[in-house]
Image 1: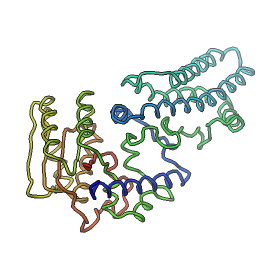
Image 2: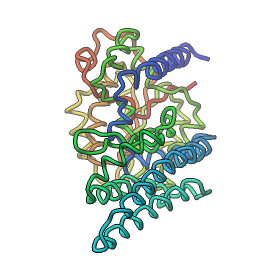
Image 3: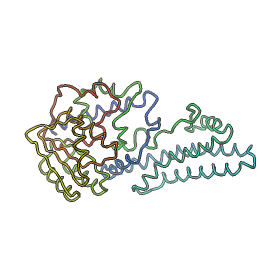
Image 4: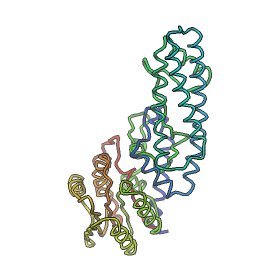
Length: 367
């Protein structure tokens, strides 16, 4: 293993250990605060299911365990429905029947989680409906006098998840949160980039144990040429909306040529900018302007001598802004070397800004 790849593996392990230790220790775990998988996030997950061996089974088993929890919640709701029915006037029976029907939708969702459903785009999107299913049931519960208070009381007795938050019931945790994220490295970008306001603070802990360069390396992954080519191929097979920028350090000419060939077959134009005598460096505003102006049917490749942590961070800021707009960007940076140490850490890192932009960027170091 080359020294850079070894450094990446060490830094990545350190970063993961800090996150595992700190995230959730504040008692306000983001996954418990309404942070959910979204439709754009599912594109990352669907791609990951194709690329990572064993991830599909992890997701299936985790969702089945989640279904068991949701059935406990459903049983509590049904107990409340029965309690309502004991004192309800005949005039409100139609409203209670609507609540029963919505509860059946909850049951159908649990049945789906426990089935061997195909991991297709439509089926994965169906998973996003649970927030609406839950909201509709709880909204109807609130229509009946004292029913919400009764639900919270029964939940405490029966081990269900309903907890008071002001005058409402607290938001559920993310469907994919089961002893960590079921999506693994394919977790939503907002989660991969952090957004920590808690104490202990995950970014502060990371900064206390890792240098800026180590943090950047910790967001890279060691990979082979074959796996990188497969990642690009899978994205193009799934559709252009799945395409994500790729940054590769230590790329061979064969990898660059293979990437150009794949993009040539998918786009009308592939522009290759070679600056092999210099290192890559663009301010985030410059990178955003250039990449945002790319024609719709053009892929853009930059081949350079090297790239450092600061340049990657600046590029990450621009890529993250474009990602938020839903831009699927066929941009590829191939650098010969990783330049370190950095003269200074990036200001956003030094200032401990809550959202760090590299967690959701495909950063590869060729083994």
